[in-house]
Image 1 (tube, rainbow, N blue to C red):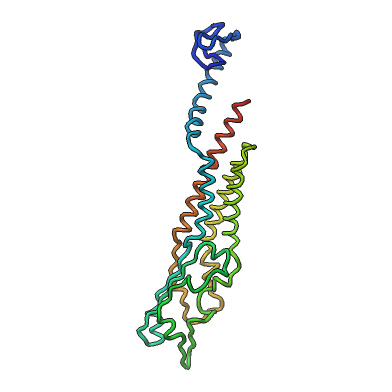
Image 2: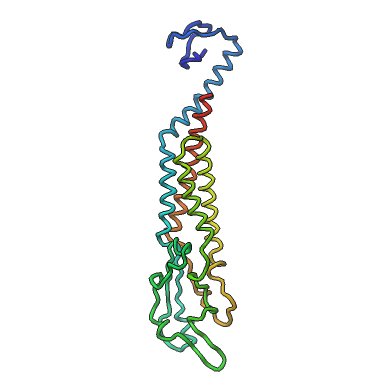
Length: 259
């Protein structure tokens, strides 16, 4: 049988535990068997929880949320294009028409921060900005023949939502009074992942859709690359979700054992 006080194995029918010297109340065989089974089950769960306790999950979750926010200062998306062949067929020149525009995460939240420093443009765009003849009219600077001007778009609500999820999720982890609060952080981490995934899946529709384009459109030549800022943000949101979940499980089990 198992001592109900120290958990050690003791001879069946003992009235006193030889390990802790506590008096053992009489137990029926059925009750003793149930006690042994229950104790064994709790021991297995307790072992798993003890291993999880070795992980500073709450601290990891806090740091992951903060790094996810920091990722917004890194390059998020790069839009590049090499339209030399296509545009030279219009202009009958041999100029190089290429550009690369890199946006950081905060650029989509604060579009007014986008300026010429975001772009690397070849000299061809400046050398020949327009093409005219009797049948067509092309301008590389025309607002209605290329992608939308990101600097004129409204702040991206999805990325604002990601930042809010990170801030609130991290703040909640500083409150230790309630054992269910880490679950809130886990939910916020998951919500941030969904919003970030949604940002990527609808990026072309929101920022590259052509309004009223006619004739040649440079959009068909654009190459979209989601950079390391986006990838790091997604990675640390996943880490924050896992760490918050582990924190919740540890503290919930500790609370249950008190009763």
